[in-house]
Image (cartoon, rainbow, N blue to C red):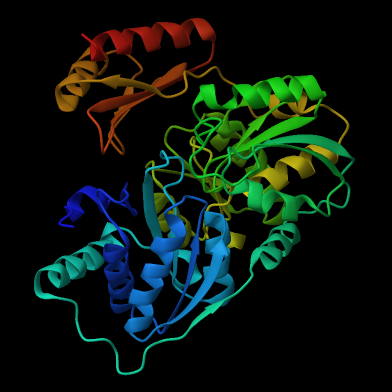
Amino acid sequence: MAADLSQIVKAYDVRGVVPDQWDEALSELFGAAFVEVTGADAIVIGHDMRPSSPGLSDAFARGASARGADVTLIGLCSTDQLYFASGHLGLPGAMFTASHNPAQYNGIKMCRAGAAPVGQDTGLADIRALVESWREKGAPEPAAEPGTVSRRETLTDYAAHLLSLVDLSQMRPLKVVVDAGNGMGGHTVPTVFAALPVTLVPMYFELDGTFPNHEANPLDPANIVDLQERVRAEGADLGLAFDGDADRCFVVDERGEGIPPSAITALVAARELEKHPGGTVIHNLITSWSVPEVVREHGGSPVRTRVGHSFIKEEMARSGAIFGGEHSAHYYFRDFWNADTGMLAALHVLAALGSQPAPLSELVAHYDRYPSSGEINSTVADQAASTAAVRTAFESRPGVTLDTLDGLTVTTSDWWFNLRPSNTEPLLRLNVEARDEETLNAIRDEVLSLVRA
């Protein structure tokens, strides 16, 4: 198979259609190259529930062990469970998943020991270059002494570690609906929640990488409709939706209303600052104004960064931040090797709700302060020209400040918007926030009319 590696090696991971774009033979080369580039003498590998995942992960293990590395296979796991194994065991790791992508896709998320990310600038470009050279010239001779391959169960230790990071001792009984989307939440939630005073109402817990019920992407409103209806029907205290590899978690209140990830970021930040007074909290530039406000109110230092987990993790490592949150429902914790875990964020929500009598909608109102548009995508022929037209329209207005940390951000005292290009599609993504709905709608419509002109 002469697949074009530039099509499958992305900014942070490997991802593509199986077997059209990549297969087990290629995965074996990736395993060998991963060991070569990281210099690892031992690695850990996990995989999700996609039909192609076991074969691809076994092939990666063959490639790695042929280069002399000892391989620990942890089998079915969520992505944050693989990060736990990498941190806990002190080993580089590889997770086979394509997150919320459709069933025909698969991918590899790689990390160094301690769950440190491997992206284009931190080893992924070197791995790709090695794989390309080996495909042209033939793979190198195996190591004189091949590595061992063993299996290890990590789910119990993963659950225990997460539960040790949140005080759940004062929690009242709660009824919780969880939509796993036929993804890895169906594997992790029963073990993590087993010791909690929770009546669990499971939805789509059957592990099925063909996603028979809906896409495992809870940020698309169409994919949480079932959860919203079930929360209302059950009279539940809240609902949780996990994506395919269960590293992201989306929260629904007792009325079935979705809670913006910015509000969850602010809530968790306040709780982490209770544990670590004066700490730094990272937020990307399209989270709500409420996030830095809440961080300052609780004595912390907010730091604004670009969108994307590699930027967040780099900034967390650089600044020693205690927590980081993104609008996409990725939540990062210093106590979890700076890696993202939706499960830990969910436990914080359960602890916050369960330790006081008010419903979740009332609790989060303090953290959800301003109307926002959510992310609106527009297909454009020329991203730069459309962005320039918007800049020209706004830059000379009184009270406006502009910055280009990530796309174009335009801010006033009453509203802000960010317009940024997709890295992978001919799209511009717009996020708007304002102090009232009327202003929000006016700014949103004006920007969209310019973008789509």
